[in-house]
Amino acid sequence: MTSFRVHCLAAILLSLGAVPGLAQEYGELVEVNLVTVDIEARDAKGQLVTDLERGDFRVFEDGHRMEVTNFSPVARPATAIAAAPTADAAAPVTAPDAPGTTAEATSRIVVYVDNMHLHAGSRSRALSQVRGLLASELVAGEQVMVATEDGLGMTVRLPFSSDPAAVAAAFDQLATLATHAQEDDHTRAAAVQAVVVTQQQDIAFGIPCAPNIADAVKAFAESSRQDVRRTLSRLGYLVNSLAGLPGRKALLYVSDGIPLQPGQELFEVLYNLCGGGAATAGPWMPDELAGFDSTSIGPGAYRAQSAALDAASYDVTNDLRRLAAHASSNRVSFYTLQAAGLTNPASAEMSMSPEDRLLQAPSVAAIAAENPKASLVYLAHETGGRAIVDTNDFRRELGRLREDLASFYSLGYAPKHQGEGKEHRIEVKVDRPGVRLTYRRVYRDKPVLEQAVDHLLASLMHGFEDNPLGVTIEMLPTKPLANGHLLVTARLLVPLFKLATIARGDFHEAKLRVLVIAGAPGSETSGVRQVEVPLRVPHQQALTAFGKSYAYEVGLELTAGRHDVAFAVRDELGATTSFLRRRLQVTAPTAVPPSDR
Image (cartoon, rainbow, N blue to C red; front, side):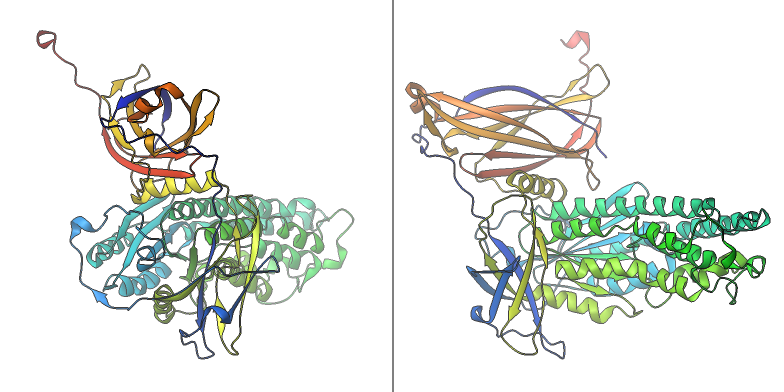
């Protein structure tokens, strides 16, 4: 992660040469909010339905019928292509010349491997099948990105590439990385062991199921919830960066699953032990506790009813809902692949000590199987993707992922709200019996500035550039700072005739907003910095001034090394934003020997 600070420096006017004329004078523009809904339609046999028309669809937002203003069937041939030259594998992404054409000609698949919630065996099985689909051949217009979550955060292993050889090399690298789900298994088993020991002691003192019996379970649930939230946060960061890229995006999330209620299976153990289940019988019950009479639990004890309430208190559904709403807003569909398949990796790697047998109780084992799967199903359903669960052969569903991206209907409607930050539910109906639709169910109407930040992340992470304002960047000489960091200055040159202005009194006024973000290539960043830049030109100087560029200097305090830096320059009155990225190798300036000065 890059640590940096921004120093806002001087703003000046530089001559462009010829005077093209004055900027147009008008008030602040209102941006049109168009909501795009991508829809896959299949019949009862699972075959794609490709002959629907605009009039066959009805779209509702929050229960209100919406007028469909845009409609486009998208169909791309699934024709295999040869490997692209390596130099082009990670070429910068540029904005399309015409919305709805170049943008829709590209389908982007992000393979996100969550090593924090994966076992080595299940990862190997899953990735061999994913590799077989994506690394053998790509179809025309298809790009693949590979990223992982490891102990220190998210890492991009392969930027978007259309080269099957580069994709194959990235998958080969994944096999060398450590997995961490087994660490969670050991912590879970230790928590159950602590429960057993505590119960034995409590029984000896005549106070079975004393309140402290839940301490180890609550600690495990809290730690697990923090892990889940870190994962969702990193997925959210990646999703936001994808927002700035045109067209549809599929995020193939490979994991054994993340629990919807962290620790729920251990609270079920407490439920059984403290009177809520068959606590004194069954092959899963440790011998030391087999004779315990649960009806003897006294006042003030931890009771079975408490277990269900405590389990619900660690629920992460709201976190998942926010992630799904962000993804849907960004035209990102989750395709969740449960790598564990039909096996339970936790039980497969678990020793069969008496304490561990508690986890084999039918009700406990059922929760352990369903809890991590529920979140995967939820994310896929809400974002219009597909949950690949309960199977060890993923190839058929992976093939459907490619079909979904190649053939769909794109509908658009314009709601009355604009950037109010609220979540909205979408419902689409089709007037043809037997046709089943898959589409995003919820989205969040992002404020304009938040959308700009998403595009800035896309510029930083994926090389996305769009420059309608004609901004150019000059990098000035690096200067050392007293704290050992380096001051890197970027001069942003904005042609004034490109800006919208409004006449106020004796001045032409424009309003710019500059945003900047920096990060080490392929990793997370330390955040976005922004500054508002008001601009005033006296009427009597307008003819000369609008033939020049407005130069705004931004100082970046960086450490030595390689950095990606992305800039956004937004014309607030004209509702137009330019996005640019520079890759820098920051080094300290070489000292000049006294004899050479």
